Image (tube, rainbow, N blue to C red; front, side):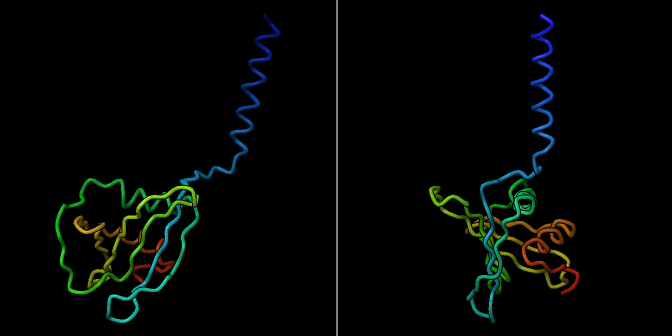
Length: 143
C-alpha cells in the first residue's frame, strides 16, 4: 500500500516537472501570410509571414473570437492596405483560406477589416494597434 502511494506521488511529480519544463508555446498548427498593397491599384506583394505561435494566437483572438462582425457587402473606395490569411503548417492539411482585407482609418487610429466577401468589423483602438503591429511590425501611431 505504501509502495503504491509512493509510486503514484512519484509519477505525479514527474508529470509536473515535464509539464513545467515545456516551452509554454501553444502550437496552433497555423501561420499567417501577410501581403501589402503596392501603389493605388489592387496589386499586392508578399510582405511577411507570422510563424510565432503566440502572435498567431493573438491575431486569432483579436479577429476570430469576435461577436461584432456585421454581415454586409462592403464597397470600400480603395483596395485594402493589407490582406492576410491563416495557413496550415502541414502540407497534408488542405483547406480554403479566408482572406482578410485591412484598411487603415483616415485618423490612423483604427483599422477596418473585411472577412471574405460579406463580413465587416471596425476594431477599437487597442485591438487595432495590437493587430497592426503584429501584422506589419510597425506601430499604428507611427504612421
